[in-house]
Image (cartoon, rainbow, N blue to C red; front, side, top):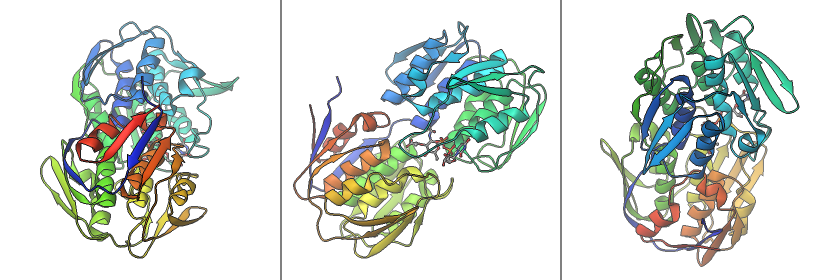
Length: 420
Ligand code: EPZ
């Protein structure tokens, strides 16, 4: 049974190594993508986190089976015989919406609860729908559900996204796998998780090209089967440990990671005064001197500075020398960690999309509440650098995306426990 609070006593530099888990935001979509191929897929390097449990339940609700063996998930979708995903699951995890494309591709129809807003703002799905409409999907909303149908079948099309949305790009690729002919998606998201989805689909027999760039081509209607695939490392988890060591000081090495996917973050950490050395599958961060402020941090789609790293990097800079400006360009409301950080003595002012962080001499431990996944990780990060004890409530948010965060930090020397 997961504990309810994380308790951190700050002030100890971190030292040692962490093996980075597989990427949550890739694994979730690969599980959904397994719906396309009628057979079993073995997905390795899947993180043990609660969002994966929810996505597994989604597959089981649809009639498939999911078996976990350590970090390998065996997903068998041969028995899937329904196309409806209930609100109970979608409300727990917005990423459930990524079954829409595969269900439409497989059955020509789907009924999926509308995700609604979330802690990061309104989070519409209009671009998901526009992309699939181009392929011939008709949408109808009814009592909080999106009902998708394809009265004239699915056909390849030119899909021009208004913004490189990660989820809309993925749903367009997945639906296009079931469409007759060729689909070209322009202004596609370029995140590494999209390239991982392409690799998975190609291993299942699909013909998808271009992921990692802005134009993705899908040749639909190829017979798909199960496959064996290894999920890419989680770049945001990697960044979290880097920021934790930047905040607390010390010398850590992260293994099973891919530094090229984190260039925007490692550049900012170097600007702040950290030493960052990278090799084929590791990143080492050393911080011995106080940090300094950095040029404005603007979150943008990949390969820019990731919105998912905004809160954790902000937490690292709370005691830096000088003033850093953050501009959150991706989500409407992603500063909910700020009032909690202020309770720890941080000097942060926010105005719309902008947050101005003035470094303070000292942070002090406090009782704080996590309101979202990365914001929660930011509170733990700040706690590592604060004097005294920080108690973080709402850790269910943290368990959604981090496997054993307190245990890994403890192994690095942090004084951190979980309590009820
Ligand atoms: C993915 O969310 C990630 N989630 C997010 O990670 C990440 O922050 C985000 O991409 C950006 O990198 C998963 O992969 C499960 P978007 P997604 O569609 O796909 C707006 C984390 O902490 N938009 O690229 O939902 C949307 O409201 C999480 O792990 C529309 O307006 O992100 C947002 O402002 C949180 N209409 C922006 O675009 C649409 O139809 C980017 O969203 C779709 C999106």
